[in-house]
Image (cartoon, rainbow, N blue to C red; front, side, top):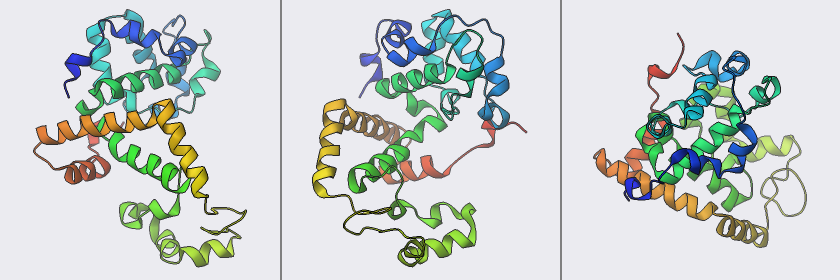
Length: 238
């Protein structure tokens, strides 16, 4: 899949078609209030003011570099920036639009953080389509999150017992926390994905990721595992 063939004539104009961009991008005065309030900027080498400033240039080359960078994947989408901007901009909304365009064009595979989109897509959409939840205990493996500690390890090893003590109806019929979602409802969720473009997005992420895996000399399992596990020091403030 060649993203050069899919590249729109003007990246800025393509961003302007996104309703989140329209809502979040007005006139930036480069005051830096968004960066000052941003929780991600405390930990990452991340400056939302610079992102909006680059977009505001309407320069295709700079916007393309942004779409291929780690930078747009640091945002936690908390929207703290929206609450403080004196011009009512929403850098978080601009970044969501940038992420969407990066995914559609396959540019996300060019950055370490962007490549994490593959395991995230599989985990989140897998939970929704298989269980009807965004987060589900069955998809959580302690081995992948050892930083959660021994208490959570015990919890995963005694899942049904632990959840029962908390009053959950884990994978049971009828009402209750973590109840089993009927197949009819799961089928409806799949239909929503099909109609709204969710299924197509999964396909696009997988297709571009497969091409990148081949470029890196990996099979898909190796590629996804590296994307899930590896994190270099270059991202963080020290």
